[in-house]
Length: 238
Image (cartoon, rainbow, N blue to C red; front, side, top):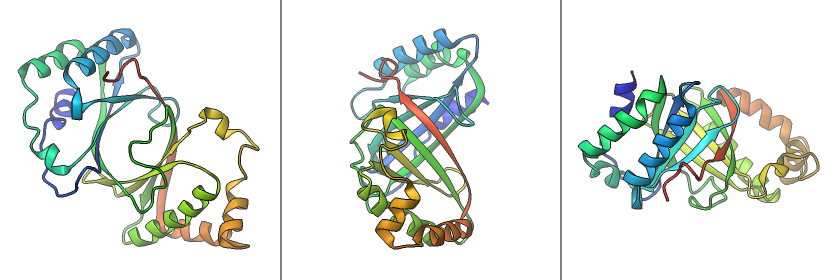
């Protein structure tokens, strides 16, 4: 399983988008090998993932993947991913020797496409603390789900939230992912930092709009889960 997971990182994908594709993968260290894993991961990222292929490494603080590490490359174009080619024997051996032995069998990999229309923050306007919401869409309801996020965007703007929106592409169940970038850190989650979502939604869209939104949400979204992540700059590319 671990071997196949790593090989997924080397598979070229053909596409047409320009500079809005992010490659992501998650890896989970063995509980008794965390220090060895972090040392190997940092060395690998800083030696082999530079330039366009820099890694941003996040620690997953909460949710079903808590304890894992979320790693991103990009944004790049599909064409750049397609032409990347083999990463080389030295790169592969370094991962196999210094990182892979310290990981569990668990892991995921995929691609996400940044949605300019639905986002209200630039793709590379990053923050060190983020909240990721995964929304899994019911069959035939992609337009309905997109319209829900379009309405949310107006509320994010009114509440001065920075949210990047991605469509998960060719990577499992259809989902829309929102990434709330906490520019002011975790204090943005404190009561009173901004108005409650329901109140702000009604202010933007009219009295009672939040209840209609919830009804439409139930029709379009199969399930969702939310997680908190923190950037590990010490493990990321330099």
